[in-house]
Length: 438
Ligand SMILES: *Cc1c(COP(=O)(O)O)cnc(C)c1O
Image (cartoon, rainbow, N blue to C red; front, side):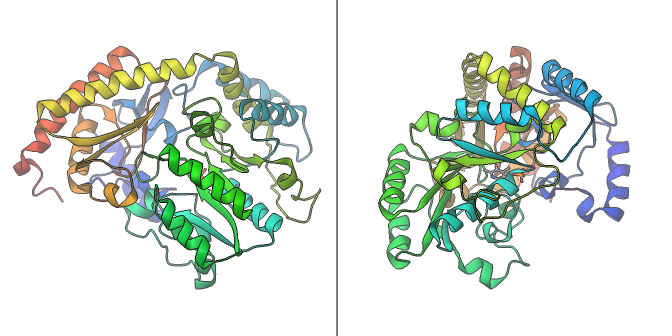
């Protein structure tokens, strides 16, 4: 694979941008080698600056449910550009997208648009604190909720990959209000609540974790969490930035049949533009300014281009209920292909999948918690990753991430991916092939 131009660009990028990238995991540090610079995307594929073609399974880390540059989103964007890019005053489309979100996700009675998942989660926690008058909150080890200070305590995703789950730069004061529980372990939650009697504003959770790799919550666990939060008057926040409109039109909460008090969204909700949203019970959302005293604002929030792309994506979902059947069929097909590849090399690596999100963990035995996820052999994953890349398959360049199947991955794509998987796994099975790589 020729990567001359990417290599040159990366060298230059490192002079002007920290690590050469605008978000850490993109730098390929976790898998070795240099990042690929992308030129354009179309459907299930993207193309780099050296002219290589890749079947893409990160979909911009989640947003591209319909693949790259779907015609109906492109059309909506081009039309919106004609009218102007930003007004900082209300538009009709903001009302329509808010209505549509409340329709797709019934627990959301009111919603506010922001510009990223990070903004959504930090605003949701602020709303919960303002509403309850309490300061502490519970998060789970290995869950990632964006990069606000108080979330970077035992966080997942890039923070976990780079060995800084608790980031320098976060003050002790900030860290003190973040209480850490164990995913899928209700007793750890009960203990914390017991020890911090009447001081907890919120519990925030990825109802299907995607940022320690895919680790679904057990139904029982989420149900008990719901009950405890109701009993203790703690605001339950489902962070559905990844799972929202991904695993079902109503997100993970629809799959589990559990109603959180607040939900946060991002990724798919923006149709590929920078959008986030938080919403939920009216009585909580009414506390947000200008109705209530909890301040939250944004110069570009509800931006007309972003709303046009997001509205096109959500309207498509509403009008095509079969989207999730298609995703399930394609993803199950790919899962089978990968399982066959594993059989071929006589490995029993954990493959977790919920709908179109999945992770192949390089560890044998079940992965149902943070502790079992981090048993994975990340060096081996890195080697596997590089092999897949050589075969034109672009996976997440780190073990503790999800890969995503889109509605436009074809049978040919999925077959190619499965056979690349056979070859990559055979290659890494021979330890001599990766011993001296790092
Ligand atoms: C991606 C993600 C975020 C952060 O969203 P950004 O748009 O990157 O700020 C928060 N929570 C979850 C669950 C995510 O997957």
